[in-house]
Image 1 (cartoon, rainbow, N blue to C red):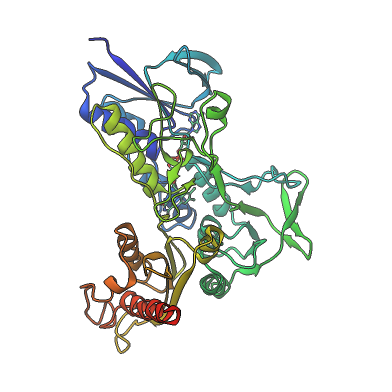
Image 2: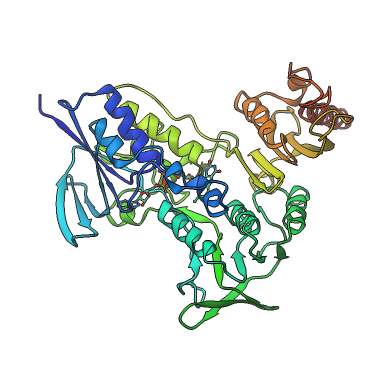
Length: 458
Ligand SMILES: Cc1cc2nc3c(=O)[nH]c(=O)nc-3n(C[C@H](O)[C@H](O)[C@H](O)COP(=O)(O)OP(=O)(O)OC[C@H]3O[C@@H](n4cnc5c(N)ncnc54)[C@H](O)[C@@H]3O)c2cc1C
């Protein structure tokens, strides 16, 4: 039997999960696996980068789950500092540039996995490419940012208040760097509703970050390196700038090679993570997902999704059968001691879909009110107006708040309605929650709301 050659483009979460799963199922005599990675590292935690910059994680090596040598031990060959710059779908070859030797070679494949990830948005703002302006995406970026923070910058400016911007702000504050954050929207964390986002904006101010909302960056100033960030209203001095303007799927290579993109802008795949092109698979941030509540194609960039998609892809390539069912966009983050979480759809997203919903917002505590350390937690839940089916949830609160989102995610996944959730047998002891957990208080209120609205209409 001829040996199949699997080529992986991108050596992080999705690509290496696919490689590992395929290897588990097919021995080296049957399947050769070669992964090309532009950077120097493989299987690193991009999610840990802000914590390395903030010195919570002391050594970047701790962020690496598997080095190229460890992959080699599993008979997976990884060529780092090798960039794939073209894919020939007909001839089944990739063109690979060796970034150190500046050599270009053609490599054949029978099975190709595109796992090129996502990339930070870099709008064409004057000065955005000046030295001292950092994006945060791959491990090298994290190492560079850490080095820049170690050098003791006088002032930092974060551009964009998504979760990466906020985690970077926390890191800088921890390191004692006076930090400002500029966000064009009226709130940070745009993907949650304004009433919840407001609490996060306050948390950002509370840790000492100078927050400027509804201000767009017009230019980044400096000669040989960054000196300031200019908005319509002010000029903020900066020796260090971190871009947190969001990400887009890294699909340049796929697109220029004729690989089909879906409506979300990410690579179109079926539930087995196959593209419409024979032998070509895609997984991770560069691949499209199906939203289980809206039913729409989405491009979310989350490690949770990338690992699962990579696994599904690898099982299938290895001769097994697996499907990736879709996503809810469940995500958590924190700004120092304030935790933020969401799952399902926000009000803005429901509005856009033309859906009608009921909602409940409740304030409670993370532990029994009398228990030391009890802290505020706000929980918001959204349900379909008629059926009570849960559509989304958001949580902002102190320690122990955020992971409660997983109860909502499980309920939405199983298409539960608010009424069915009221008596869920959730745990309780004073150090962990009030006897009525905030999750239960919120769904109780929501169920009442749904009943009332049904009654109003009968
Ligand atoms: C700062 C930060 C914090 C995050 N925090 C969280 C979190 O808390 N929770 C969460 O769920 N997710 C988080 N994420 C998102 C998560 O890290 C990503 O979803 C995940 O890494 C995606 O995995 P991937 O394999 O699809 O892509 P990536 O991790 O982006 O890997 C793609 C790899 O492909 C390589 N590559 C790209 N193009 C080529 C090419 N042409 N040739 C060769 N190599 C190429 C890149 O160098 C890169 O190493 C965070 C991301 C960042 C940047």
